[in-house]
Image (cartoon, rainbow, N blue to C red; front, side):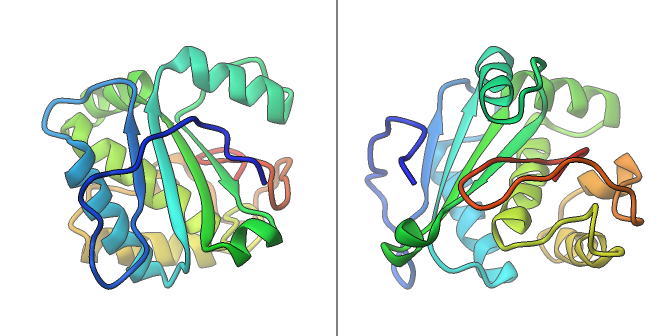
Length: 186
């Protein structure tokens, strides 16, 4: 898998695990690269996901472009997950997550919590997809796991809980090396 995003390494690698890479192309009040990388590490460990995760917080325009390119859907969405293929996994890469800062802000206002918390909700959802969960095909397994982790990680209502997915509904899905769309088509 070729990485989607040109990046720079975080100066603060966490001991005890592969460092996660966070790129903030858009800023969110109360959220830094370091704090989001720390959350990713906690979430990744809670899920049992092996390998490094790259997360890019970007514009709806870039998310729309990725969604059109990889999924044939010419619209913005909140989060996309790109699981690593086998060769990348062998090199310690779990995958990549792209989150729309614009949609995260809109969701936060609508749901009454901070945009920083919303980014974490979306990141957790993406990590679960990188770990192989699929709420449209797993009869609620991902929804239960996400709700449990939300409580442990002290996050507001999960993406699945508020979207109504995870109860056997189906939508198009893609495999390793292709994106999962969190919320509606993961």
